Structure formats: structure tokens, C-alpha cells
Image (cartoon, rainbow, N blue to C red; front, top):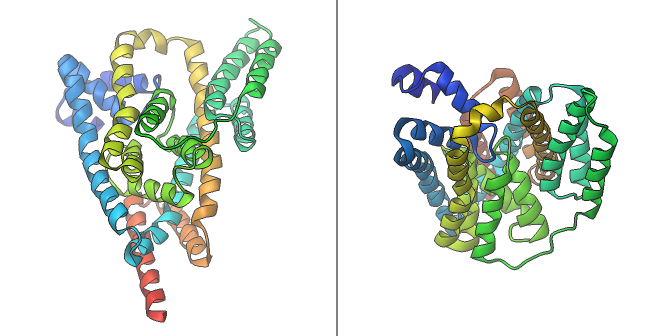
Length: 352
């Protein structure tokens, strides 16, 4: 976007672009999509907001829909199973690389590192993701205030502890299009940080609590989200189609992307003032490290489902070396994993 909007088309100056980039980090939702919406709004007002957002999202949604249709219709064929068998270990490595890169930027102090470790522990014992995200933001604010000797941190921490203890687990519910829409609307409204944090929410609710998806289906959805262009949030389109056909895909897509339009429209005029607030910055620091904690736990859990035998473990190790050492584009890694999976599937078929 910087190359196109600033250097080639000269729609914005470098400073204006950086201002919009910073604004996307202050609101929940997919950052790349929100940046496109901000640019459209800056260029052409309300029509620009809608056109830019829709144009950025629509191509990816259509491509993912095509993949979802093929997955539902042909997903049991050996060739497709072979592709996914090879792609899943690579996906785990790609998420780990994203986790490492984001962690180096987000964990700025020992206090933030401690909050992140606490987030991992709370996730493992089953505390709800929203409490972890927002609680971490509150705790970091409290820590900043304590450091400035404005308030005593003990009371704030005690209140948060009571909130965690009172958190009740979500009961299983039967599938429906309306609950599906509300789930993705909730995620789009509260999710900070990388789009990969979406995986933690999906696994916690759709796999663990409601049992709408299996671990394998979630890994397949992640794989499709990676091999297709566009925002990672189009994973919701794939899941919606698998669960509820075309209507499910459209509702899931609308639910997860709608908050981005609302937040950009609402936050645009007040972003400069929010960015100057030390407390807003502290809250975002806490939310970001908590998001990384959720990512770490879900990556571990999905890794156990993806690394099922020696070939997948070797594929993950080789992918990790190539990705971390040589910085190869992840699209090529995914293609390589798919080819290896196909070859292994073909070999097993010949052996039979």
C-alpha cells in the first residue's frame, strides 16, 4: 500500500500514511483492511470508505469461496488430502514465524513479558479470551500508573483477579446461522493484533466449546487462508461455507468485517487525540502481548494435530530453517509443502 499510495500515485504523503497506519493499531479488527478503508475515506469520503473496503475484501472472499466449494465437494479425495497433509506443518511454522516477529516488537519491557506469560497460563487453564485480552490492557495501565505513583496497583490487580474467578465457561450450543454471524461479529469487534489471533478465538469457541468444527477442519481453514491472497480474516468465509453453505459464508464474512467499517468511520476524527494518550498506548501494549499469548497457546495445540508422524515433523523443521534462515516468501513454502504432500500421498497409493 505504501508503494502504491505514497510513491506511485501520490495520494498521501509519507506522514499522512504513517498517521493512518498508526490509527489502525488503535481499533480492533484486521489492520490491512482498516488501512484500506482509512485511505478510501481520506480520498473520497463516505463513498470512498465503502468502495475501498469492499474492493479490498471482495476478491479474497470470492477466491476463498471457490476453495471452500472445492473442499466441501472434493475434500475426501486422496489428492486433496495429500495437499493438506503437506501444507499443515508449513502453516504451523509460518504462524510461529509471525509470532516471533510480532513478539520482538510487542514485548518491550520485562513487565510486558510477565503479562504475556500470565496470559499463556490463564489461556491454558481455560479463562475466556476476552477477559485475557482486556484484562491485560487494564493491568498494563495499572502498572504504568503505579510506576508514576498515581495509584496503588494492588487494588486494580485484585479486582481483575475477581473478574477472572467469576468467568463462566461458554456452554455448547447447536449450530445456527444467527449464532455464526454473532460469533464473527464479536471477533471482529474485539480482536486486536495480528489476524492470526483469530485462530485462538475460533479454536476456543467453534472447536472446544461448541464443537462445530474439528481440529482438522480448523487447520484446513488456516491453510486456505494462507494460500489465498487478501486478509487472513477471510478464513471466516471458508468456515462459514463449510458450516452453512453460501449463506453461512456470506454471514460470517459480513460479521467479521462489518466492525472494521464502523470503527474506521467512528475513530477517524478522534484518532490524533487518542494517539497522544499515554493510557491508550499502555492499554494497547497489554492487549498486544495478551494476543501473542493466545497465539502461542493455539499454535502449540494446532501443532499437535498437524505434526502427526516423522514426515510432517521433518517438513516442519526444514520449513522452519528455510523461513527463519533464508526469509523465503511463505507462499513458496506452502507450495512446496503441497507438492511434498502430493508426492507422499502418491507414494502411499502406489505402495498399496
